[in-house]
Image (tube, rainbow over the protein chains, first blue to last red):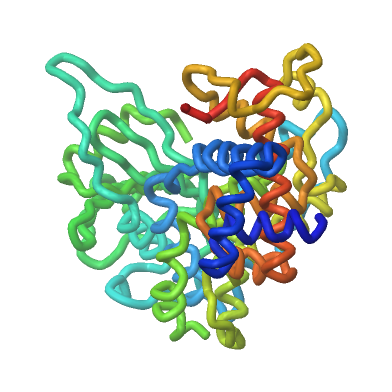
Length: 239
Length: 179
């Protein structure tokens, strides 16, 4: 870029003093080459501006949640993830795996308003609290919306307890579903719905929790009555 | 550090849209912009205790670009790289109209995907400056901080990049100019 071009760039940025800017205005009346450069600059700037789009709903909440987990669980953020070098033909699978392992964080002790909840339950509850309320009409009479997964799975480790958290949308409701190979402990105040605490329901703030423990345990959380949550659980794909 | 996370979020969350813009254009194949934003914030949080800068937005952009670059290196791919076939697909076999004034090419409607593809044709330094300034809304000074180069260099790169982008769009039969 020569001195002439630098002056032109400064003119376009508004960096020139009024006298210089006026001289450039006059120059542009006569110089076809510079006039074209100005128009091309404007066209390029306007076109690039069309690529602006707001961040997806919930991204700020997701980021805040990840930071809060990092702050709560350790004095360092996410531990380095073990990565598998993708091999030809396996890129798609590797990409899917990377998405599935969007977050792996360690929660040693969950602070705040969920101190009475066991750590794995508290972690899921805290996550569910970050899910913004859905303002969509539900399905019409007689309709039953198919479940749609929202976003990507998040993996959280609470007290060495790995939990995969997914968010599902069913009609007008978003339900957080956490799955784990270990049972979710029954929190104080929960009501068992089966012998031995294999299934239980509880309240945490405005959230209902519904858990089915088994070889693969599931904990559902949503801001709806517990009875409805149990009914929604039956409509979700098997873990 | 844990006690600082509220202060950190207060200082950085207002910039999540800008960071997302940077991430969207810095993320490579197989990398989700949302994941890149999250990783950016986690790394920023780890460094927040020692951060003494004045421009948090520029600092976040710099981290985001570094994370994307590191990821690209790990994948043994160059950042900001666009596969040749994608570029060829983006541009039709245009007749030689080199002398054509881009402002004279008026096409009803603008395909943002074509803009993104043409943006992918630009050299990385120009593209980075355009993304930061024209897409994410950074000032030239902030872009300079994020990229580690002087403000004048950013202005020169963005000017050259915009002109090149306009010409590419004209060759592709797309123009944003509405005269």
